[in-house]
Image (cartoon, rainbow, N blue to C red; front, side, top):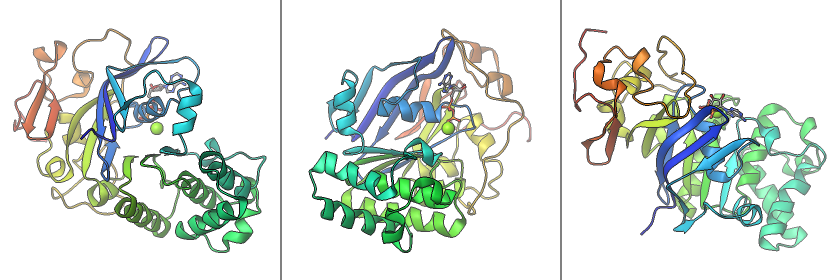
Length: 325
Ligand SMILES: Nc1ncnc2c1ncn2[C@@H]1O[C@H](COP(=O)(O)OP(=O)(O)O)[C@@H](O)[C@H]1O
Ligand SMILES: [Mg+2]
């Protein structure tokens, strides 16, 4: 059976910036796949490229890009927009990206269902109110009549999440969806997503920098650096035996492997994510890597540390640090 979402060799360039460089990602039905990495690594561009929502000037190429077995590389805008909001939905870090300031919450939420599912107005209103309740919004009837600017940031975020779920999508791509929310609401929304996943077999690609969330809800984790997935593994394996020096750097703040507290931030590594020009060769992390050696300027092998655990690095799987950190 084919994966719900499969991307191989996904590349995005903006002029002379290679923002995504041959990314491979798979999301299975019912799976939560977390994508982590520092700011500027290409996580959002990857998500937007999959959804066909790249900003003007963004050029996408892929060896494979398929959704539920269908090649979506050459769908036109009309065909893509039929998929979006219906079978695949995205929630953004900034809710106003998907909310229109000129329409009430109710009319935006019901429009999605009426367009894709030919629901009656009454059915759509019922469904919208139900979902607002499920994302923890009290007095949904009142909220449906309000405009986005009348809501707090946290409420807007929850409205956007509810809106993405209107048509019961099969794939949900969530780009740091709970960053702005307080811990209680965050937990509520993650529980909601987990519930939907159980009920509907929803596949989730979740972009987050919160290792506590990753440890609790991810089935698989991919670590992105400078436009590439440098390591991908089942969650327990990634925390117990991280292979890439970058992954190990991100996890340095985790005192005991596998034991992650809520709100555990990514570790900070000296230096910044470089801007990579097209045609760059070698490992993009080598300037920041304590283990870098000559081979890191050449072709970087994709190695298998264990079944389902892949790493893009010249070091042998299971390597030990040259010097104590
Ligand atoms: N619209 C755009 N035009 C030009 N460059 C962009 C655009 N969007 C993103 N980029 C560049 O692509 C790279 C990856 O960005 P992004 O995916 O937003 O990172 P992340 O989500 O991991 O923080 C960055 O170098 C960013 O400057
Ligand atoms: Mg981003």
